[in-house]
Image (cartoon, rainbow, N blue to C red; front, side):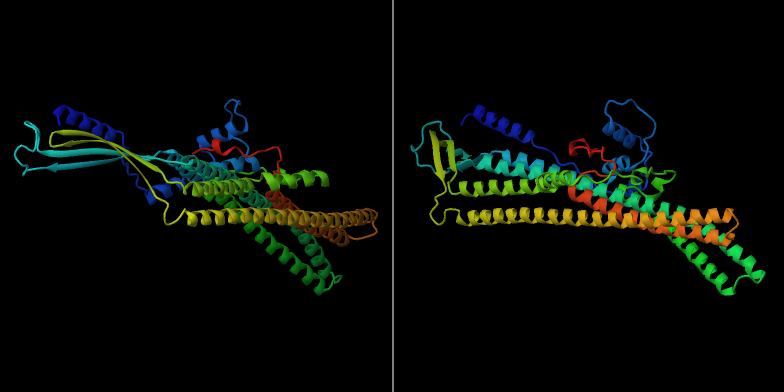
Length: 474
């Protein structure tokens, strides 16, 4: 074999190896990672740019956005680790599409024999006493295996993309629930402070009466106990408000001190839009059963099993191995063309086909189970919302009655017909009923949140929409 031909083959080998990717280590430092997490804050300029660009891509740079449910949800989408996990899974699924598209690499077989005992005259004069036989085996896939493999990978990538949307909704639910807890605690604190102020007045008035012998010690003790109960309840709500801020920070993906100086705008929970009419709610229900992100992900998973079955069926047909080559044998040049393939003698890929059929059936059953769970979740949330609305209507009626009664007592007090303790007691009844009404309001808001999750449709701040997964910061 000539030195020129050997040089060409060596150069081709070097060129092939040069195109290989290199390994780049990327060690993970727990200390550095913890420091980055602990330094997160809503004042991050990149976060604010992301929020403004998501809300209005055409808007000019502006001061810090107001932090409400919508903007805090965007902050959570920017920071929360669950979004990063879903994005990493999508990156892996998209890389698997590249793998599925690739054709099998050819295989180089090289036979090299040096003959030192050749019989005189057995080889041509000047010929090298060696046998060299390079053969390249090319695998030709048949029956659309590559197309089926690629389709399966694409469906799994689509499912991973929908999983990001599902993670977005879960993140929104966490932020909403924390904000609702904070809203309920703050409203409760305001009502309890009003109740405590009235209780202080009543205790002071009864103390004066007791000193004058016009009230019993039992009455004074009872009101003091009620005042202590309100004071303890106020402390409990202060604790719940602090816990809600910590829960909000966790839901966003920042440390609790990252919310220092931030007073979230909770007005969206004061007067949420009324629930839609029955016909519109039914339309939302149908849309949820077909369009929710987890439904779409489950459909993509099912399509992936379809492609996997197609690939298993194609596996019945053997691939063809084409092996062109060259053989230099003691001065004789030979050109080779090998043709090979698997002989389906012992089985026709029946096992993998049966497995693929079972997996498709399992995916179909999982899809049906998911839709059944969605129906149950919507029914439960709708029922809870209706019952909570009825309870709220009842407490509204009680509050209206107590308010009218307090107004009558106030009119009587101004006319000199009743004393101040009677007036304060009537005002206390209104404050106590208002606190009970707050419980009913919070129950209705929680039911509305559950309905929002079941429908995957914003009901609090309904004009806000979650950004597509492709627009999230990496």
